[in-house]
Image (tube, rainbow, N blue to C red; front, side, top):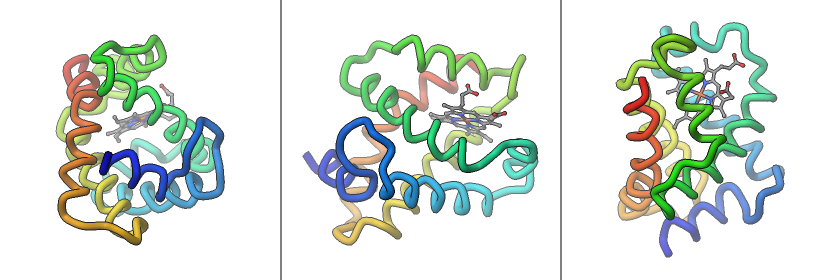
Length: 135
Ligand code: HEM
C-alpha cells in the first residue's frame, strides 16, 4: 500500500523509536512551529526531544484507528488531554498539524509524489476527526 511504504521509508518499520523517526518528527515540529505563533506558544514549556518520541508512539494509535475504526485507550487519553478543558487544541489546529505532516513527508520521502499526499491524508483523517470531535 502507498501509505505503508511511504511510512516505512520516512519513519521506519516496527514500534521502536529509530533514528529515522527522530529525524522525521524533529522536522515535523520545525514545520509545524513555523505555521503560527499560537502553536509555538502552546509548546513553550514542552521538551521537544520528548515530544518527538511521544508523537512517534502515537502514530501507531492513529494508524490503528484508521484500520479498525476503534480508538485505543491511548488515543482516547490523547483526545481528552487536548480538549477544551485541558490543552485547548482547537479543531483548526489539527488541519495545520496534518498539513505540516504532509509537508514533512514531501521533504523527506525520496519517492514522494502527489498521490502520497492523498494516501497520508486518508490514513490520518479518521484519527484527526476523532481528536477534533472530542474538543
Ligand atoms: C492527531 C494529532 C495529534 C496527536 C496524535 C498528538 C499527540 C500528542 C501526544 C501523544 C502527546 C503527549 C501525551 C499527552 O500529553 O496527552 C501530546 C501532547 C501535546 N500536544 Fe499533541 N497531538 C496532536 C495534535 C496536536 C495539535 C494540533 C496541537 C496544537 C498545538 C498539539 C499540542 C500538544 C501540546 C501543547 C501537548 C502538551 C505537551 C506537554 O505539556 O507535555 N497536539 N500530543
